[in-house]
Length: 280
Image 1 (cartoon, rainbow, N blue to C red):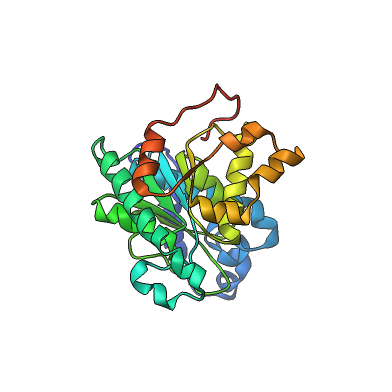
Image 2 (image 1 turned 90 degrees about the horizontal axis):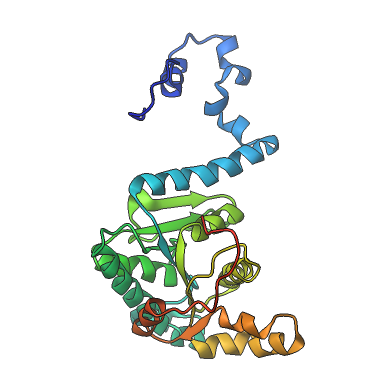
């Protein structure tokens, strides 16, 4: 129980423990008798989805606050991108060629974590999806620097476990993609997007949309690998068609290396104030 709590009521932990040591009778074995908050079958009912959404929003938020995380540097990127020493195992030659971004993500995270540690380690904490590939590289770079980092995993049909470099106390697991994406951005002071697939594209475009529409403050937004991004997305065509404005192309910058990214973040120029809901 938290020290600040001074409620005269009996706390939930006590009653849950008490309920585990009650007489075994037909009545106490019945599902109806279980404490609602300790009844997993009840909590997983369709009607309880609003409660589960709230729990996924609250748990990571409360734990990151208690840990002292004030702001984050977000890393999005592909799970399939191998580290250079393992690029021979890549499915395609192109994927093997993208292995250089594993090292850039690792080095960028190391540099940003070293800067963060100089001011206490509470600001600009690296956050990734907690999985392999670019995500592993991000957490690994923070680990190299002797700092902590966040991993936001999600339950997928195929087996996925957190990479070994995520700080255990900041390793979270999600059921809802939407809530997970909220946590990526709630503390974001910069967003860095490395080459990736559908998931990376989804995260990138949702983040850009929030900034474009003023639903989120403008923050440094970096795309690593101009050649990759201009090959798969015709940004100028969107502007020429009028489906986005030419000013929207200024919401992000292309970078190639970790050092370049650090310099861009340090010298990020916001072209005028933007109204909108703060990131938190």
